[in-house]
Length: 174
Image (cartoon, rainbow, N blue to C red; front, side):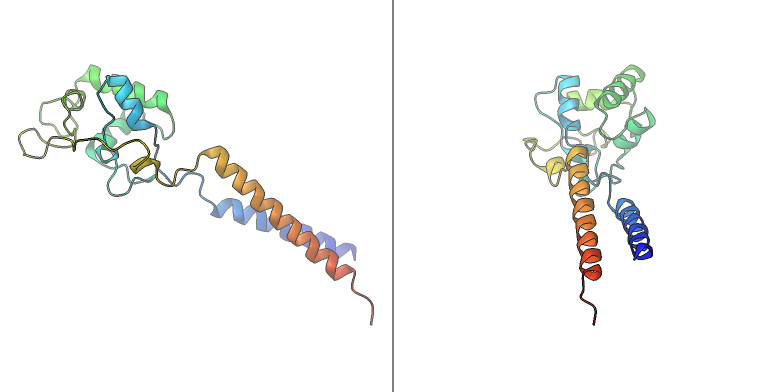
């Protein structure tokens, strides 16, 4: 009977490792970034998530020219400080992500999209800006919530395996 318990313990460890490898750590965008940009640049409203994200905001689709510029200046997901540092460095360098001679910061301060070339007819950001509980906020699960869900899943799996193991060991002999 001891070997059965050892096998079940090994199976549990393997399953837990697989569950940990399969579950995504962060599968969404950083929802506070529009507010950080608004606050840092003292804008009247936060810019839309589309200044960085293509399609529905999610980790991995922040691929606009402005997002790539932010990343090249050290932007890290879920790190407000890295965003503020990148914005400051972009401002100091007078950087234009699309190379049109108008800085990204100046465009944002003017309510324009830093990904558009000035004069192309599409440089103004949509108004009004979306409220913060839309766009980037959709499907937001923070790290502590994800950790709690992972822990509950692991606990449920362990209890289920334990009950299964006990029910097999308590069967009457035939």
